[in-house]
Length: 375
Image (cartoon, rainbow, N blue to C red; front, side, top):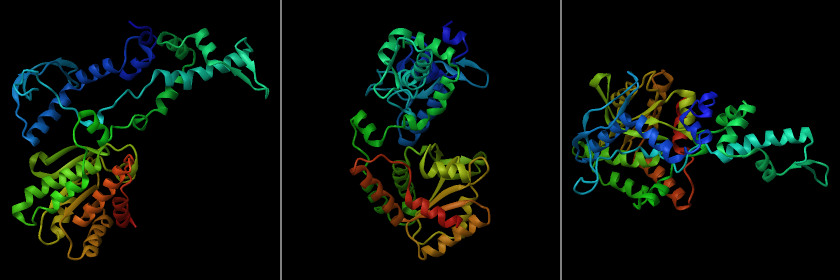
């Protein structure tokens, strides 16, 4: 057993990257993949169903069952890599959870949380490492500090045991914001694929004729645009998501995984674990029935915030007042968007991308629309 484990310092898988020699990004990634293999299998199967990717029956590999707390194996449907499938089965991973590196960083932990404590001890003890600057303030050389105490993982274990508050303080200082998901541009560069073009996605929506005949095409086109626009704040898209044991369906459903911006604020203050979206390709504006439909998808578990998209409004102000009535009656917050609104969101995103700016999740139009519901 490692010294870090025997001293009780480990409380999270990523702690191993700080405290156990030989454990780094690749090993933590491999362990994580094995632990969440079951979830990745489900995600891969859903993506293959959605995009029409063929799957074949093959061995699952070991899958951790969190209920029985044991490893299980079976034969399941999964895709295979390569044109002839000879490269073996593969799993798809939501890009919202992909990172270039680990959130925890050994050097940042040492330099920012351990070394200052060691320096303070040296200064208080007035050791030979302490030098007095011209202004009279004491200083300790980091190079000499490393030489005396060490800064490898075994030394870090000793320092952490000596200063038990250092590691909890470092943990609290890190978050998803410390290592955000890759942007669309970073994913495109890494995978050598075209970057998202929001205006082209909007053009695909506007190319669909209103009416029942184009309902499915409109549904898919709206999903493509929203998935691009809302990433990485709303992720894990499901189309025709079933609720109430299949008695009801939601056109599009996203998990709200935001750590900042508008959707983080909505989740904290108004409840939004998921974001349901209803798409109406009507030649006329939606009515009370459609508004009641999406408000019926809200619940304590799912949250109280959703979107309804349509082609246009005969009287936009009137429909937005209906949405406000729904909110005032305690039946949830419905933000209504027509083609003009979606076009505005797409143009804003395209301008931000062209300027090389990372999406901070503010969505001024959505925040304005939501404010109109609560004020």
